[in-house]
Image (tube, rainbow, N blue to C red):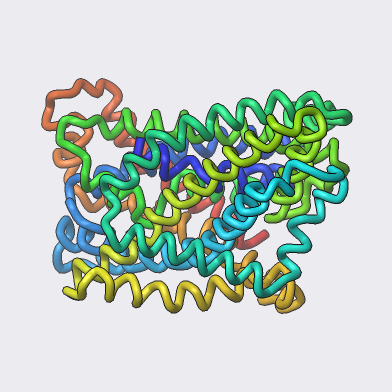
Length: 437
C-alpha cells in the first residue's frame, strides 16, 4: 500500500493526461502500457531487490553490496534525481494546495464553467501566489519528513488512495456526460500511430518510470523495510497494475472534459489544472451541494496523494545525508530544503514571470521535468538492472526473488535472462533514439 500510494499520485492525475495529449492520444497509451508491464516491472523488481538486500538508501545499498567499486556513485545520481524532481514536483503540489483553498471558499464549483478554465492562468500569472503555495507545500513535506515517515505514509495511503480512486471513478462518469466528451473518448481509444515517434516511446518509458517512482531510490528505500517473507515480484506486479489502472482512469476522467471545454490536448503541464475547474463548475451547475462536496474531497485527496509522493522523494535525500554524513535530521532537511526552494521558485515562475526564459528551448520547469524523467530516471533504472544482472551473483538474485527458497518462481531463469539481456538493450535503444531525435 505504501508503494502504491507513492506511485499513485500527481504522476497519474497531472502528468499522464498531458503526456497523452502531447504524444498522440491512444497510441501513447498503448506504448505506456507496454513500457509499464514489460520494462518498468522488471526495473521495479531490480530496485526492490537491491533495497531489501542492501537495507539502506541508494548510495549505501550500492556501497554495501559492491564495496570498493564505483557503483556507489550511481546511488549519488539517484539522490540528485530525487532532489530535482521534488523541487519542481512541489510546484505542482502547491497548485493542488491553491485549488483546495479555492474549493474551501466555494469558488471552484461555482460560476461560469468557461471562465473557470482561466483560474490556473490567473494563479500562474501571480508570482506571489504561485511561490507562496510552493513554499507552503514544500514546508509541509519537510515537516513530515522531519518527524519520520514510515508510519505516517502508511496511515496516509490507507485512507487517501481508496478515497482518490472512488472520486476519480465518479469524475469519469460525470466527465462522460458532458457535451462534446465523445471526441475525447475517441481520442483515447483510436490510436494514431503516425504521431508516435521515438520521442513518444521515450516519453512513454519516462512516464512509466516517473509514475512508479523508479530510478531515483524511492522504491529502494521502501523495499529496505520489506520483510524477508514479502514477495518482491508480487509487489512489483501489483504496484504496476494499480498504477497503470489509475493512470487510465485519470485519462478517461480528464480527456473527455478537455474536448468538452475546448482546451487543446497538447496544452502541457497546465492541462489538468485548466480542465478540473471546468468539470467542477459544470458539476456545481447541476447540483451546488454535490459539486462543492466532490470538489473539496477531490482536492483534499489529491493534496494528500501529492504529499505521499513528495515525502518519499524528499526522504531519499534526507536519509542519505543522515546516514552518510552523520548530521542530525533537521540539519539534513535544511540542507536540501533551501536549494530545493530556490530551484522550485524558478520552476513556479516559469508559468508567468519567467515564461520567456528558456534553456535548450524549454522553460526551467519543462527542463527539470524532461531531464528527470527522460534522462536521470531512465539511467537510474538502467543502473539498477545492470547491477542485478551483471554485478550481483545469480544465486543472490534467486535467493531474494524466492525469499530464500520459500517461494516457487518457475519463471526465474526467464526473468533473469530478461533482466540481464533484454531490458538494458531496450532502455538504451529508446534512450539513444530519443537523444538523436
